[in-house]
Each structure stands twice: as C-alpha cells, then as structure tokens.
Length: 454
Image 1 (cartoon, rainbow, N blue to C red):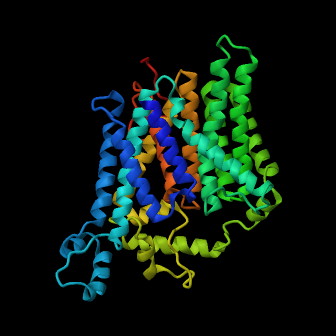
Image 2: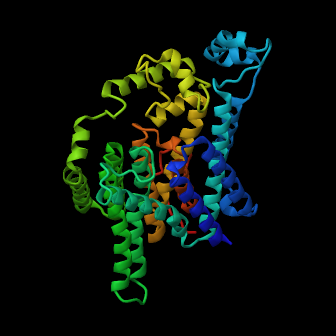
C-alpha cells in the first residue's frame, strides 16, 4: 500500500512540476483537491509514534494554519481597528462601496488569502504524510525522496535538451521562470550527492562485485552533475549561488563531523577551494555577464529591486503585527509603491520579506520557529551514527539551506511545486531525526546532539 501511495505522490508531483510548477490558480486548486484525496486515501493511522510531533512543532503548525484562516475571516470593524489600524483605515476608504455595517477581514484580499490558507493547510498535511512514510519505509527512508528526485532530474534533462537540441538561449524546463526552475533543481542537488555516497558505501559491504556499487553511485552522481549543468544553463544567479552555498555547507558539516585537528582544517580549506573553483570555472559566459549585472533581471533593474524591498519594509511597518493577508501583497503595496508605477508589483522578490508583510510578526514568528525546527532536525540527523541516515540528514540540510538562500532574492516558496518539494524535504528531516536526541526548540545545543542509543 505504501509503495503505491508513494508512486501516486510521485505522479502527482510530476503533474504539478510539468504544468509550469502549478502557478496557474485553477490548476493549483485542482492540485489541492488531489492532495486532499491522497491524504484521505493514505490511511494514516492514529497512534503511530512518528505522527506525534514535538509539542512546539505541532503547536506552531496549528497556530500558523489557524492564523492564515483568521486573516481571511470577516471580523467586526471595531476589532480590526484595535489590532490593525492600517487595515481599518483602508476599510474606511472603501466602506462607501459596501453595505453599511459590513464586517471586514484583516486581509485586503480575503478570497486570495483563503486560497493560500487552504494551501498552508494542504502543505501541513503533506508534512505529516512525509513523516509517516519515513516511518513506514524505515530503515530505508531514502525511498521517500526518490520520486521527487526523478522529477527534478527529468526537468534538468529537459532543460539540457532545450539548450543543446532545440537551441534555446537558456534552460528552464517546463517552468515559466528560470529562477524557479533552478529552485527546483537546487533542492534536488544535495540529496543526489549524498544519495550517491550512500549508494556506494552502503552497497560495497554487501557480497557484490566491487563494480556494482560504483556504477550505481556513479549513475546518481552523474544525475547530480546534470542538475548542476542545467542550473548553469538556466543563467539563474540565485540558483547557481544556492548550489555552491549548499555544497560548501555540506562539506563543512561533513568535515566537522568526521575529522579533527589539522585534518579538519585541511578539509575545510579544500571545501572552500572547491566552491571557489566552481564559481570561477563552471559558469558560462552568459551567466558571467548576468553576474556582472548583479541584482538585475529582465524586468527589474538593480535600483528597482532594492526600491521594491524598501517599499515592502514601509508596508511592513504599517501592517506590523497582523500583516496584510496571504496573497494580498499586490493590493497592500499600492499606497506604498514608489517603484515602477506602470508595472504590476505582485511579488517582493524576497520570500522572507513578503511572508513577513503578509503574515505579520505573529504569523512570521510561528513560521520561523517551524523553519528553525526543521533545520535542527536535519542537523541532528546528520550526526546520526548510521551512515545512510547521516547522509540523508546532510542532504536535507543542504537542500533547505539552498532554498533559504535563494529565497532572499526570489519567490520560490510561492511556486507550488517548489513549496511542496521544500516541505517534503523538511518532513523527511523531521522524520529521520533521532527520536532520542533532546533538541530544544531553539538553535543552542543543536550542533552537538547527544546520542545515547535507540
């Protein structure tokens, strides 16, 4: 049953990824319906130990979903005036167009906020489903990420075909935006690298010909190389930097975990040299020219992007605690927008800023706790005494770090396929986290988890 469920999940993710990442609203609604059906058919049984999340994790997740829906619900104007003066001022300007005494929501675009609240709920369900499947496929949890990696590699191959066979100027797979295409691949790259290492070291101790594990590992590492080439050919600066950043972090984490003294220093230096060499020798001339025009895109100049961030910060100050509502960024930014007046600014090109603007400090703080918790889980798993689990945790850590960095200059988390992949990786990290490691809800003490046996 679990295998067929995993196949269904893989097909569903492939359908979303190959339909422009699921960015079309009507397709995303169908995706939510399909995800609900998969969750309903999964038959998750209550009482499974793996389905009992940490109280902080569960509490913050429930609170975040609830807050997302609260933003879209109609509330008495007096209450809105009390908790969000800026939203109440907006309500006063528009009440002549509404029925007197009508309630209003904290969100400036409640219909869109409701759709995104349902999305947050669906992603929370995906998180629980991922953790449950990790439990079901134990002690080989790598199977849980295989369908997602297959889709990412297929997208990379398609991108290479676009450039080398069709003659396209850049690789972007089936995505509308090359940066989001690179965002999908950067999530897969760390897992492919650590998966290749796992395939070799796990199989070489079996009674097999020495060539068999080497060929299998080479196949996986070759797929990782294809992903890197596709990111380079996408001309995505953020994606390329994210891949190098994740490689550096994984190298540092592996060195500090396995080496000591001068050998650790040598390994850290080699990791830094490898990343710098990759930055110098991997980019094509076209990608180098794009780095020369840093912070610019075809639609946005460097000054325009920075000005959008400044406008967003002014909006954040106005809606500091309660936010403007998920999906209401474009509507809320208009009074504060001093940039590109002839263009529509519907994204901040910075997920961190936009989530803070839309959720407010209340929702953003809850989300930040969840992010830190998932990073904690990945770090703890990367210290596991079991090599396979350690490599999977290291790959999850690298993938989450890559998307976190890229999100500083883009809006990958607003692309459904990329958001699903990131949440799935976070669920795997939480699922393989040693049950006996005492992780606090904050970062101190996490880098040195104590392993006392199962």
